[in-house]
Length: 405
Image (cartoon, rainbow, N blue to C red):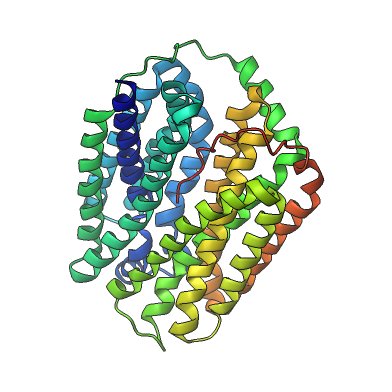
C-alpha cells in the first residue's frame, strides 16, 4: 500500500516538474522570432525569459511560508494550474508589454511548486524512499525544461511563436491533470499559523554560515552563465556563418541531456572525494566548454555547449546536496530557499547581461563574461572549502529542491 502510494507521488511530482519547467523556459528558443516581430534587440527581448525567473525568485520564500498555512498539496496544485492558465493566455498577448506582464505573473505562479515540493515529498515518504522519488522530480524538471524549449522551438519555426507557446501550454495542461489525479492528499503535514520569529531565525542561520556561500555562488553565477549562453545561442546559430533555421537551432537544447547524466555522476563522486574538489572540477569543465564555443565551427560549438551543460549541472547537483548536508536542521528549509533565490536571480541576471553582451559585441563577449562568472564562483568555493570540510561525509544529504533546469 505504502509502495503504491509512493509511486503515485513520484509520478505526480514528475508530471508537476515537467509542466512547470516546460512553461518557465518555453520562450527561450523563440526569442529570435519575438525579436523579429517586435523589432527588439537580444537584450530587450530576453525579458520574455527573465520576467518570469525574477518573479519566481522573489516569490519562492513567501510561497514556502504560505504553504505552512494552506497546505503543500493545495499550494502545488494551485501553482501548476495557474501557470498553465497563464501559458494558454500568452499566445493571445496583443503586444510585447502584455507578454512580459503575463510572464511576470506566471513566474509567481510557478514558484509554488519548487518552494514546497521537497517538503511535501520528505513529509509523505520519509528518508528511506526519498531518493528514488526525488530522482523522478529532478527528471521531471530536466525533461520539462528541455522538452518545453524543443517543442516551442520546432513548432514556432514551422508555424509561429504563438503556436509554439500554445503547444507547450497544452503539454503542461495534460501533465497538470495527471498530477491532480495521482497526487495523494497530505497525511503528515500539520498546518499551522505563520511564525515570523522562527522564519527569521532560520534565515539568519542560512545567511551567516560562510560554509554555504560557495553553493550560493554556484547557484547564482553558474546559472547566470548557462542561461546567458542558451538565451543567445539561437541568435548566433541562425546568423552567418551557420544560417540554421530556428527549428534546427533549437536542437542545441539537447545539450541538457549531458547535464542530466553528469549530475548523477558528480553526486556519487562527491561522496567519495568531497564536494569542494568536485565542484571546482565541474566549474573547470564548464569553462572549457565555454571556450570551445568561440570558433565559428559547429563541430566545436556543439560539443562546447554539451560540456558547459555537463559542467554546470554537475556543479549544481553537488552544490544542492551541500546545502542539505551543511545547513543545520532549523535552517535547512531557509537555506534551500536562499539557494533557489540565488539560482533564479542568476537566471534573470544572466538572461539580461547575456543579451546585452551579444547585442554589443557578438558571441565573444558573452563567452568571456561567462568564463569570468564561472571563475568567480570557483574562487568562492575555493575560499570556503575549509568550512565545507566540516560537513560530515557520513551524514545523509537530502537533495535540495533547487533542481529546476
